Amino acid sequence: MTDQPFVPGGTSLQEDTSRAAGRVVRRPILEALLVAMKEPWTIVCLTVLGGFVLVAAFAPLIAGDPMAINPALRLKPPSPDAWWGRDHLGRDVFSRAVFGTRISLIIGFSVAVIAVIPGVTLGVLAGLTKIGGTIVMRIVDAMMAIPAVLLAIALAALLQPGLTTVIIAISIPEIPRMVRLVRSVVLSIREQPYVDAAISVGTGGLPLVFRHVLPNTVAPVIVQATYAAASAIIAAAILSFLGVGTPPDVPSWGGMMADARKYFQFYPSLMAYPGVLLSLLVLVTNVLGDRLSDVLDPRKSTRRL
Image 1 (cartoon, one colour):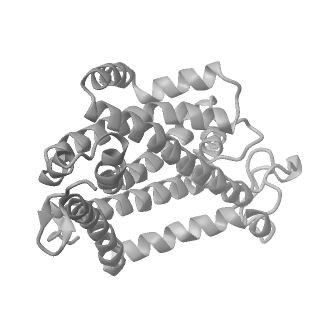
Image 2 (cartoon, one colour):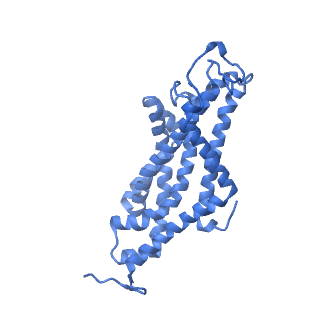
Image 3 (cartoon, helix red, strand yellow):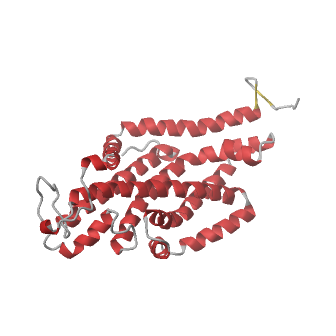
């Protein structure tokens, strides 16, 4: 039987440090959920975001065929058959905007998930190992030297056009940001007393990472993921507006604005509808990220918006 350092209360030092680390993680996250839900702006943003999700989920029931073309009805004003009017090809603007919501949410969620998985892995590696950290950070610095939009445009132009291509093209520039964030968090975690205590009693390698390092990166990663999702939604609209994003047969807000720019002087609503939806979705996502940042950061725990 191995000897464990005695800690008052009948627990070993390793168990005590594990419980302390658990409290460090669970307490701010639970407080974040409780405190954030009490804020009026958070409730409003969650309601609006939930509305977008419901619209995207039930798009076929809410709207008709977004690709149905009727040249005889081109540029017609709003009517009972087309609530937001019709575009230059006679397509229902409302239907295209509804299905564009689905595309934007898919891209935002997918990019956030893709950025988190390799970003956290490489960030932990860079923060815990000297040689590996040097190699990873030099690659990250090289990637961040290239403007994210230009890199996404180049990848979208090189790969087969489609939704998957857009997600990959937008995810790659987001990964270095996540790596730098996680690395900075890991470097600060390494200096914490409970990590030194865990190492002193023989905890190392993967157990140290999974017990003490990864749990304490959850809060900043969640916040950064919301920003990555909002940034991805904007980038997808930019790519579609420039003609290198989703194909023309896939309704998207950026594609709708690109089609409407020729008629903006006479029919500004064609560009206004997708533009307002894009701005609203990005706004509520960023506000939620800000609120989570405030309640998860102990230094901001006394601040209320």
